Image 1 (cartoon, one colour):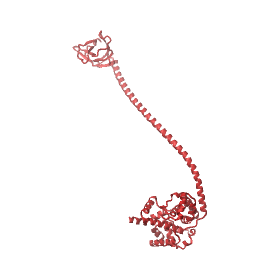
Image 2 (cartoon, one colour; image 1 turned 180 degrees about the horizontal axis):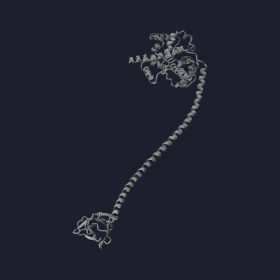
Image 3 (spheres, chains in turn orange, yellow; image 1 turned 45 degrees about the vertical axis):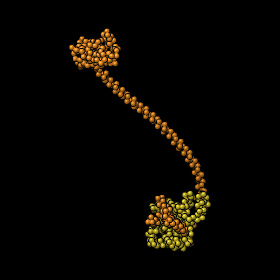
Image 4 (cartoon, one colour; image 1 turned 180 degrees about the vertical axis):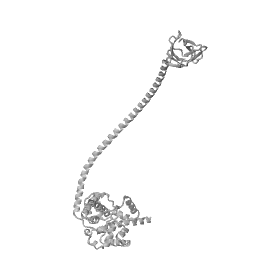
Length: 263
Length: 177
């Protein structure tokens, strides 16, 4: 500690502080020493006394007019203060204007923020709708493709058309079969099917030389062109009413039949 | 820190914004401060301008004075010295002359630059031998350390210390601040 104090007293820091040449940090250091060490405080006191003595020794009579100038300057400064007050008043108007502008800005920002949220929501809805529309387009394209393929098959010159009408048991039954022996494809278009009890269903059969082959079920909901298995050497197609869950009974009641060998 | 009754009265007036403070300040300190300013600026016109500005600053910054940190004269001295340096700098700039102030914070004025004619040292100061005056000026007005004064004046350090001691002792016989 004593070394620290000794170093401090031997440094020029106290002299610099005396004449006001120290930085803020240096001043803090010096003031710390002065408040902490009586020796430093005493040295500072002594330096101050010496400074005043030396300054008095080098005193030069100051001109008297400076005092009157000084007092006039102070008066002017006081006058200026009045102007300052006016400026302050002006400043307060600026403050009000600035506050109003700030409030306006805040309100506008809030409104724009809300609008932005709303637009974002609308944008999301539009994006979802576009997505749905795209999937609809894809679905429609797919249906169109299928329809186009079916139309191609129907328009094929090799395809033969067979209109199958129901007998007296199912007078309203009407279906059309398209069979292409070259490409070996068969399709059936259900036009009308009379209503059946819950446990019964229409089945389509192919009649071969020695046996009957079940080609599938016809449903009221199949009101469109439907692909059925192609049977080589089929003599006729027939539609029967069978029991649901039993597709292998060739003795079911036949309601419509058409020979494939007529054409 | 000891305060004389006059100093206390001045401080009271200053803190109350009483203009009588300026009269008392001028009466008690203007000559000392003018001497300090003149040593720095050399030029009488600049010095008078600086002295007036010093008192204006004192008046405006009266509330900043802290008696626990510095004696009244020390505070006045700092303001006067800084004002003088600023005035000298702007004066030199105006005439495109090289500024004598170094980049360091300490203002060091070569001893040869002292204009003894305008210093008007009083009779009792005149009695102080020049060798003591030179040492005191170097230490108090040029901001030199004793070692720097020794190097600058080419006087041994021990001699600097003894001349400082004797010079101050002689001055103290005349002044009793």
